[in-house]
Length: 220
Length: 220
Figure 1 (cartoon, each protein chain N blue to C red):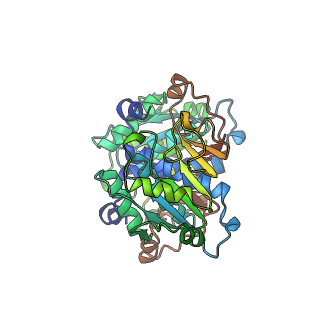
Figure 2 (figure 1 turned 45 degrees about the vertical axis):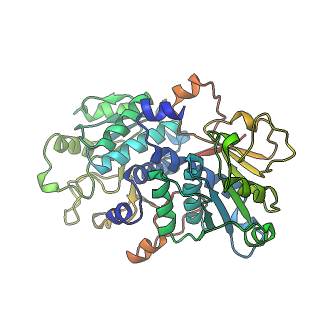
Figure 3 (figure 1 turned 30 degrees about the vertical axis):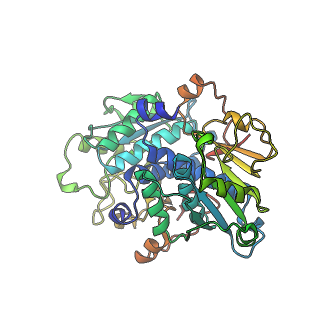
């Protein structure tokens, strides 16, 4: 579907990523409004992988800052993608702090952040070939006590995997369409992608629910 | 300011245009909600010039469609700008109708549309050199009875001009910062540009008002 948007509809990745990142930040603001956060500062850790999922995470982090959260960005592996680099620069120039490594001691993360956003691995990731540093990041995420927000798919989830040894997001924001591996997800579930052309929605039989007002996310 | 965003902050025009177009559509939905429209169909005519103002108009038209308005696009003069062409293609592929010319008989427009969005000329336009087809378009806009929504500046307004012979928008959406020529504007006035980095807001002493919730526009 993304291929069609880019090839046939004249969309650019910058546009799609910006809209999706904004929608993810709006979903977070709905489920975890500033006033509900437990810590003195509205801190959020946003972990961004090197691919498209990480790009959406970077745009989400920037919009969270605009919504007056205090996001910190962690990029486990730098990307050669020009869009990823632009989005990273935007976060840097917005004065967002960056972690150079993720503490393995999960208590440090539980103490410092209200939430962790998981934009590490996307649905296009070949899980069989995932190695370090991602394996270590996933292990840390699995050990967290603070709520996790996953973008599009919870990192490392496989449709056929048993549910015992995987991360458990409190909130999942599906991008454009829920992916198969999220069928068993039972937390808060929002959908982003209101901008999809209607004929594409019909072609892929998306049957998107009605988005309220001018919101760019809807709860599933 | 836009130059700095593009040069120093890693933003791309696609991103800025998308965010601004979305914000303009959201402002229109606030001031002219679907339920308030007089005509049987929620029709809106969106007139888009060949420059950046017209690009924002095209993105706005697409988001209006997503918000369930029925926009028709009028482009008085095709643009050689690749972004303008992409945004036009997006509208075409979203099945938005295009007018090939603007009726000079204003009653036809008053009868067919609830609103007209004026994204014809931007603040960068040298008004002294504006000729056809824009002169004719402005003359038609001046004669309209249906409300006009101007993006950034009302087309053809000059800071020093007397107010007698210019278009009178019911709603003005300033983009990032109100321009000098709009100081005398007395209709509904919204500001878009929540995404601006805080240090740039300080540098240009913008003193932006507080945006409510996750809204991307605020009333001035």
